[in-house]
Length: 239
Image 1 (cartoon, rainbow, N blue to C red):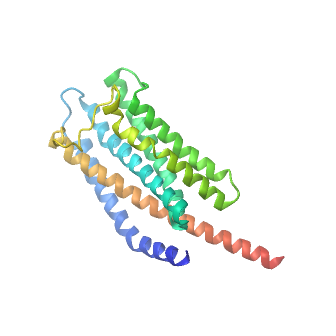
Image 2 (cartoon, rainbow, N blue to C red):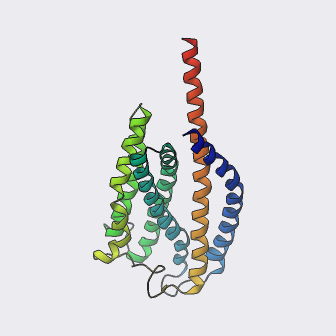
C-alpha cells in the first residue's frame, strides 16, 4: 500500500505541471477555434457552438464513470487501496462534467426541439448517470468506517456501470430525438471538418483538464488521509 501510494504521488508530481500547461493551451486553442473562428451552421446558426462544450462534457463524463466502474471492480477483487483513492477522486469531477452536459444539452434543446427537456432515452439515461455520481458520493459519506464506505461505493459504481452502454447505444436501441453518433462511426465522421477539428481539440482539452483535476483531487485525498492518521496517532499517544 505505502509503496503504491508513493509511486502514485511521484507520478502525479511529475505529470501534473505538464498536464496543467497542456490543458490551458488546448482550452485556449479549442475555445477560440470553436467559439470564434468556426462557422455558424446552416440550420442551427450560432447555436451550434454549444457543441464545443456539450459533446466534450458528455463524452468525458461518460468515460469517467466507465473508469470509476473499473476501479470499483479492481478494489473489490484485489483490495487495491489506490483504486479506491482514484475512484473517490474522480467522483465530483465526473458529476460536474455530467451536469454541464445536461445543462448545455437543455440550452441546445430549447431552440432545436422547442423544449428545455424531453424524456428522451439519451437524456434520461444521462440524468440517471448524474444521480449515480451523487448517490455514490452520498453513500461514501454515510459510513464512518472508511473500509465499508469504500466497499459500498465500489459496489454501487460497478452496478451503475450497466448504464454506460445504455447511454452509448440508446439512440440506436430506441426511438430518440437525440442525434446518433457523428464522430466515432465505421463509415467515418458525419461532421464537416470545420466543426470536427475544433471539436476534437476541445475533447482533448476536457480530457486533459479532467486529468489535472483528478491528480489534484488524489493529492488532496492522500494528504487528508495522512493528516487523519497523524491525528489518530497523536490522540492514541495522549491516551
